Image (cartoon, rainbow over all chains, first blue to last red; front, side, top):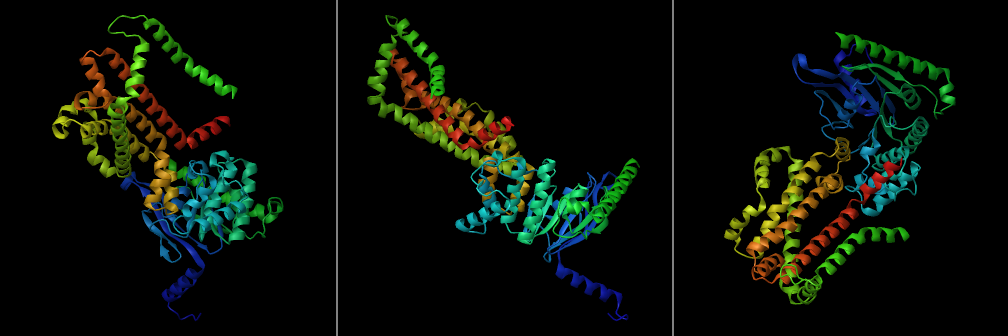
Length: 283
Length: 258
């Protein structure tokens, strides 16, 4: 690019180029409750983007407004300031090509419906019955729940229920999958299984994933990129490229020196964020 | 099989003992007020399974069923509306509270003035008296549906109707049925009371008429028929509830087992 171009023009050209690859742009999100001195600032200018096909993990200390952030991105909550652009359009309500996997599977699967009906439910608007059924069965198959469709969610273990919730998200065939600490409620063994499951289905469905978690290991293990949040009022403190080889492996990947490096980097950032939050909290 | 038999025995022994005691204690009775049970049951058989079946029993059942079903329909529909809209709730709350505090029998005189004596007045009283428990429970149940379930329904862009049909009503189901059960008891009381003062047929009408003309055996017989009908209505209701809320029973059992 010639040097004599006006700085403004150069910037706007970069923006357009970025738009093409960026599926999701979170632009200067602010959320606060109350007014004036009494106001509680939850998000203070959270700003990052997710490219198509990318797996981005958002990590932050507890109480950093991760769920609030995700609700804003999902169009379930209107931010006080800033916005989210998804596929070129500002999010004003839940977008069509977006699905959310909630933290608490026992409250997001409907206990009065069988597993298959739960997975089919979001497809009722768009597909005739036979196709609905086929797609739901395929999704259940891909999360290892083939043949379990006739059971009720409460007849499944916690890990299997979260698999069913993931299957519901997959069957919906969104362009981006938002996951809000989806494995926080399951035991460690199940969590490892589910992490690998998510990596597998991501491969299979070529899905873009925005994954919120408080678990540093999980974030580094899963992601292409980790966004580290500060404590409330929350902003992005670091954007870490995870240049670990694919496919990931619970043993081999975690034994790499690079994994430890990345993990420590994120860890240190979060510790800083925490102590900063403590100090500003005392003030 | 053996367990079912034991359960049946456990449930039946007391009614059987009570009937037998009544039968033998009243067997030689010459009292006008306490006729022998044999005579009463005879009247039930010859009259209530005879001419009165069409003349009094069916009309009562018909009025009761239509009144109760209409009340449930209205109760769930209006309750749903109030549960969905805080504005509608705030705007109607004082009126709803006032109307439901009226003891329904108080409306009998006005009901007779407006509807005259007959079917529409009886149905009106049943609907008016029994609608509130269901209406308020439905509104409460809908309002109390879990936030995350609502988020899920919104993020998957379910239509309003899908949200109501597949998410909100089932979620509020247990509470709605609790309201309907209370409504049922009130409706049973009101069919009798309204027939006593404002009808020319029906079991309630007949109970009072026979008592006033000193046909004591018939009064007893009609009372028994009423009791049996009320019991059957409750039984049917519980069956329906068990089927509709089967998921809840199953879920409770599975969480208790863990």
